[in-house]
Image (tube, rainbow, N blue to C red):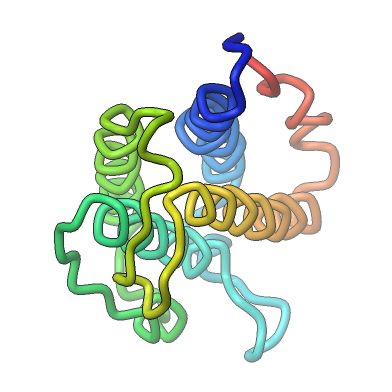
Length: 167
């Protein structure tokens, strides 16, 4: 691993956002039925499909738009209000496209750019702050996705995080 902070931050962000978290989300999606993707413990809670739509939209907004400068036309409310509006295949396509877009932005960043600022998030922030936010945000919602999957399929994931961490 690189020795300077900027290179290390970029490396770990890439590992988490492009490998570890997607592998865990993919394992959950593999276990859940189509109906379970849209199941929610209460009307106020989110379904796994909503969380995946939300992560895809949020990642594209923060990485592709805020850092990359390309408008993505995000509708955040629709990410949460969707109720079985897309199929598993459509959900996987949306998720895969967001990962490809994220990879393009992350692979285009250099450590020297991390302290550059942007106001495209509604406030002046550095690229490093955006990367930390996105990584944390993904971890939070990944935990919710794993929890729902374990709730519906006890024992199905077998310490999933240990199988994909720190590659």
